[in-house]
Length: 299
Image (tube, rainbow, N blue to C red):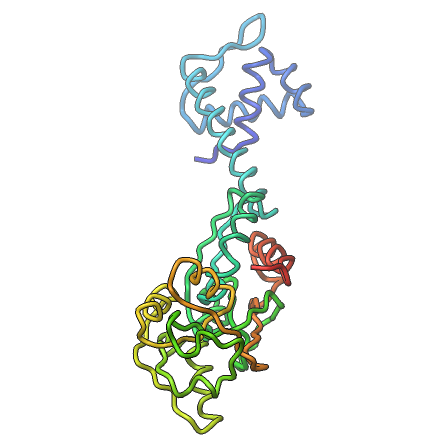
């Protein structure tokens, strides 16, 4: 079967105009070409679709049925064109983001909400991953966009600045360190720590900085989320290292205190990475542009 949209459209024009000549004029095509198309449709379908009369043409029962089907088909084809245009312009689409817990907790909820208010037909698939997994996934095209705490990784990715955060110490309110105005990292190493899981950027940073001081971290317990970490500190199991903005949120509802950490490395860069910005789907390019525009804005 070789029915095509042009032939169906000509068939509908003939029915609507009532004559082949009027349909040909409307569609800017020779009447003979219209007549030939109609004959081909009847030949393909094996049934008579139009009856010629002195007044022009009238559809047979089969022609009436085909006209209804043709209108539906042509409408669906138009809808395909509209939707594909929307994908091409970024109005529709799906974006895969892998982000670390710091970005998800501090920045992404508000910023993705603002983006989706402008592009409600874009679907954002967000997964929390550790930074090393994020950069690997972007390099292997398992994610369109990665958001991670910047550190040397040796991967060939395009990087864009996103936000900065600052780490602080959190303690139970009755802890010896709770009344301090500020702390160095070394001053905290005599106390038990609540740590995040082994692959987290904060946990790796703790171990690295302790090693540089020829000291050990007294990790009493390790957890997998900021919620669990703050609850463990609240229960008196130790102190912890956490982004200051996150710590301040939990300090309002738990019995914990936030103490600034006076170390140059306590300020961290949170970075956006992609394989190639030019190769991204349009919706992903729009989201990267939106996120980059948030650089430097408070959490």
